[in-house]
Length: 228
Ligand SMILES: Nc1ncnc2c1ncn2[C@@H]1O[C@H](COP(=O)(O)OP(=O)(O)OP(=O)(O)O)[C@@H](O)[C@H]1O
Image (tube, rainbow, N blue to C red; front, side):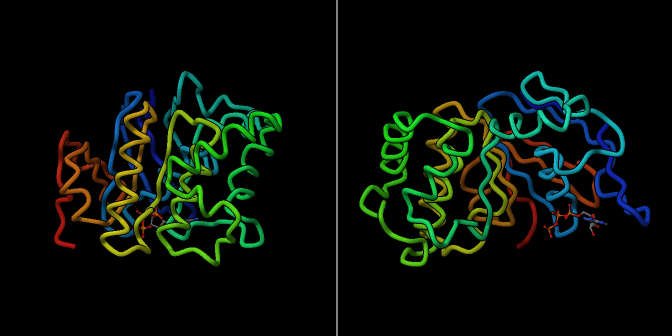
């Protein structure tokens, strides 16, 4: 469970990026985070990863109070959160298999677990045949599927996707959304920041809308609510 209480973030120059946000996301939910550019979505995501701290308020993720987390505990906390970005952020010199297995090496998983888990996750995202390809040899949609495989290989309880379809055409985007749905159906909480109106409107999931740092809408089975 994720709980934000009275979260505000003021950057230098008195920019109020988030203003008194109260939000609870239960385990296994699928939540779209929407809002115009500058609304505070990236600030929200950075806070969830504890890349930045709120100016005030509390964030609790799976019983961990982020403000009480010690610096040396942050890497362990982050293992719980898979991250997917608009620009994939794969390591270009590593094959698909290596990009995914690297995430397991980092957390010091055993070679045996890695050999068992990586092929499984690659088959989940439909990329078994591309295991030995380099990212540069893949389409955008395939690269995003590698990035999804990497994000879930360590079984995080939360997956945060920041504009995961931003660089993809509509049909490829639908494939990525199907995968996100599968991941969510297996019990992972999914939070997806997006400007993709069609996707939000068709999925009928919870929609949390921010505007100028204020949470202005929180709807179950919501719609995008903006024109573009
Ligand atoms: N490091 C920073 N220092 C000062 N102001 C910042 C910083 N980061 C973000 N801001 C400001 O905080 C506000 C919220 O920005 P944020 O990046 O969270 O919005 P966003 O909803 O993610 O936008 P986008 O959809 O364009 O990614 C904006 O006014 C932005 O200019």
